[in-house]
Length: 504
Image 1 (cartoon, rainbow, N blue to C red):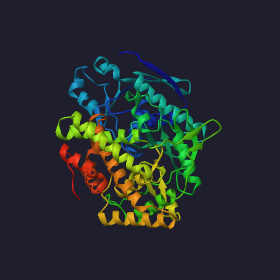
Image 2 (image 1 turned 45 degrees about the horizontal axis):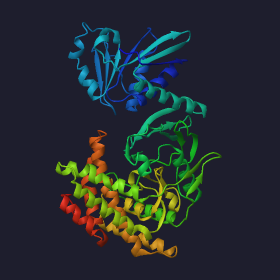
Image 3 (image 1 turned 90 degrees about the vertical axis):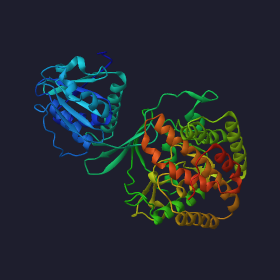
Image 4 (image 1 turned 135 degrees about the vertical axis):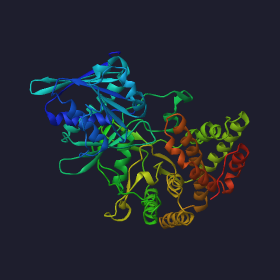
């Protein structure tokens, strides 16, 4: 085995051993092998039990020793196979236990790894626990990527300890379609739950346009500063965004107020009309405030909100051309198809020159809206995803909620939402409704062209097939947007290219 990276830490007592086992459940991923060895009574079983219970989010999970069965399997958020190789007759018996299959499906936790050392994967993480007076010393050795993940969860633990949340209970909340961010719930000693954003600065990707990587062209945030800035602005004007309680912006760690866990969909995943209508009222309220483009965060940092410029709009719309079209028909776009498609978008973007522009949140739809029934007015709507906010056509966010990418919005409700928004905007003063509706159709089409390609990219590049279930809805929404007369050229192009337009 390549020694790779090494990490050593001291565990003062059993409680710290349990805490470390729980933190490991946030660091290990499918395909990881954790090999546990060390002194008798040093805490191997305690750590393994804590790891499994944390991954299950179940403090009562039965974790029997696999000493006699050799392997115990758990169907958890990530499947885990717990091996105890003490009674392994011969290393070759590891194959008979289904080790390779278990590793391909999930995580393998291996006690007494020395019984099969040569047959364990070279990418395994070795964790040795040894007595050190009244405490234990944990020595972790493994490949740099795996050890770095462990370093990261320990850095977050140190952050929590520093701010008064020592040994707080941490559980994975969710990741998102981005490969950059993850979220945890933080259980405090008082029973309160907070949210932790884990956003390490990513490496710069390959250039895609003019020597710039995709995030820079599309104006995607790559650190936490935009989130902090926009959250402060939204709260300042009276909207409900998470309060940033503590921040380490350099490391990309934020401890946030928990706005709640109630959403705007019912148990069957269908929109709850009252909650969608209040969400639209929230948008109208936001768009009625003219905001500065530069937001000061602290003495040394000012966030300049980027413009949703033509380059970014076209880059996103190209996802349909680059990903959806080859996936759908098995052949890439021809040079003529590509030139025609991009020329159409040049024309559509010019049509937006007179559109109303203000802050657009970018992903204002059901996964990013929290319902807060105890609050008054627009504060009943909690907004949790806005780090990629830009200055652009306000119609974009209304298209995001009326054509919710994650839920079917029935036409009567969609019509009601449009009417609500128009009524509220007219009540605020001068409002150019025809120009807004034209911008709405263009922005709806642009967003759905992006999503139609994004779902395929998440499947093919990132190994996330679950998003493909949204494709039929996306194509229905695209078809609806294309009914506006300004989009006739794009509608004709889609038909010629073989893009399936699903009528509502």
